[in-house]
Length: 309
Image 1 (cartoon, helix red, strand yellow):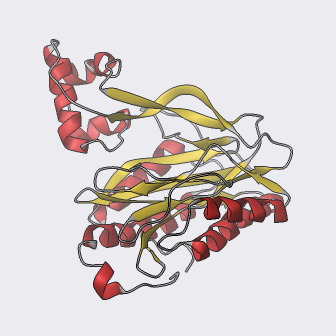
Image 2 (tube, helix red, strand yellow):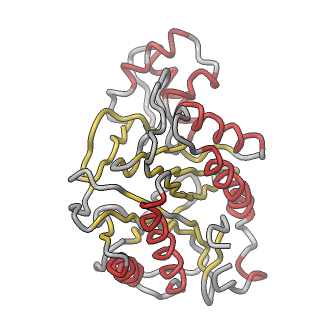
């Protein structure tokens, strides 16, 4: 644990986050154990999400499996045939929610021992960053520590990816946690945040760009639309996920009727639905990631998923 705060005063009212964190701890370990060359990304995503459900939670967002220069937002599509390549750098980013209270965590698995330093750098940056966190601390302090750690390994942080505040049914609740020094707000007690350093090689640009079609979506609002089946589907998605992300791959588990599945092509074009395109390192650099969700207390913070234990 990092700087365990005054638990009796802090943890009351955070039971959903705590339970989600315990489930995420096991899910992350389970996910890392599945990563091998030749493994189906579709099966990996499905197995991790099923584990979360068996443990009494729900995925807070689709399991992300991001390989090599892909940094974020890739989950398997229906019928996906992608397999994990030999010697790759694989990030598994997963979320768990209990009664709408989400936690977010990620781990890097390196399938080439020569690239282990990428994983170690992200984890060391996370370790050092969490030691700085406390009420009143400017989030730029995290960015400073991540940047200094990256330089000590001869690497770069991804400057346009950041951590984020987390709230009920809201994975990005306002405050961003930068991976380079920048102006920003301050950590507040009794709030939950996800801190997630991303690292890439010194030759890379240290920047991500959008690439490819979205595989993850989110309903940002709901109001009636004229198309009957599109309206029915939009309403189901809004009340099922309440603003948390989802993927087409889940439609089968939802038991949607064929007419509703067909209406998805109409629904995803509506302004009430946002798609998240895959993010790749702009110059093709390899990317690693480490992530922990924390509860800030009156005098420090508490790890919710036990990443650094």
